[in-house]
Amino acid sequence: MRVSTDDLKKTPLFDAHVAAGARMVPFAGYSMPVQYKDGVLKEHLWTREHAGLFDVSHMGQARIRSANGETSPAKSFEKVVSADYQGLKAGKQRYGVLLNAQGGIIDDLMTARPDDDGLFVVVNGACKDNDYKIIAETLAGEATVERLEDRALLALQGPEAAAVLAAHVPEAATMVFMDARAVTAFGVPAIISRSGYTGEDGYEISVPASDAERVWNTLLEDERVRPIGLGARDSLRLEAGLPLYGHDLDETVSPIEAGLNFAVGKSRREAGDFLGAERITRELGGELARVRVNLKVLEGAPAREGAEIADADGNVIGKVTSGGFGPSFGGAIAIGFVPPAYAVIGETLKVIVRGKPAAAQVVASPFVPTRYVRKL
Image (cartoon, rainbow, N blue to C red):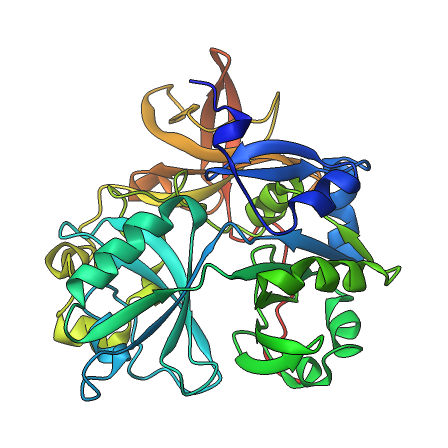
């Protein structure tokens, strides 16, 4: 079914994208830039070498606060997620997953404590209405969920991102990976985290929607910065081995199958007090039917989402969930799921592309080394 452009929402930066010559496409219910005039390949490489600026304002931002002044929002939030948020220190953020009763992933999300105003949560754009409904209903009476519809979210990624942002926000230079702070930036209240979805060093910057275009244009005045679309964002995250919700993650996939064991906090494992804990505990003990793997496609065209994965004898054992050409990697790469016995580094498998089997090899994650700044 084709989506009418009249039915699509627009981020506060829509006009700026059109003015920059972006090709706009439907994504998560929004009209979003898939690429600008330079094209996906050049945008990908520019981000790897300099600094790319992304509009991620389609994502859902919210504050979770105590509703009764007694129960901490972090304790309440742990009812629906598997990460340890009571142990989250001020000025930090943590990756987590929202789980269903079967231990499947409803969504993956970032949660921070940038200040003393409860928790700051960012979820995927296509999932945000359902996510916040589930969270609000589950936490009713203990915590409130305030959706921040009046804010935009920008991501500045790449090896020169830190120098670019520090020229405007000196505090950014003192942050390390997964730090999150409430600051005054560009003359407005902002929440900045040193994180992103490309495998590169960089930041995500939450600002009032009314100031988004001004902040966007200010950053683009720096010759080291160029606007980057969804196409390069996808190839960058694929090279970084980062799963994408709706493709590599869904409500049938558990965090353990997906290789996201770190999203299940140690204290949570011991308590087993989260949705799906029974399944996840079994899987942590080794009872797994499938696991996520990285594949280097050795011949032929890239294996796209939906392509079958077969063993050396041609028996179908799994499916590709993300795939394409890795510009920095220099070849075709894919993410998929196979039984654990086949998820061994160096294992030779096959991917079925357009009805023809092509050799593929299980390789380590990430495909391209990440460059997160963990210490200064």
